[in-house]
Image (cartoon, rainbow, N blue to C red):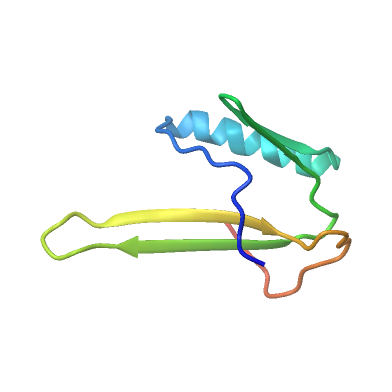
Length: 94
């Protein structure tokens, strides 16, 4: 089945604003509440299971003669109806 984007938002924010968004997601995850994302007329509500797969990826892109571009991606993945995904090594964030 092809990938379907349910929600997308991309804007510049301060580090403090980004931290607040991530904190809100973290609070909802910890409390077992659904996560609702809204931007303009877009809205999506997701309910991750107790143990989704958590992927962290850091990328560096650059073309000769241009500044490098860096990204950090945090991704939660699960299958519909999944209640216990996971595995892999221990992640540490310092």
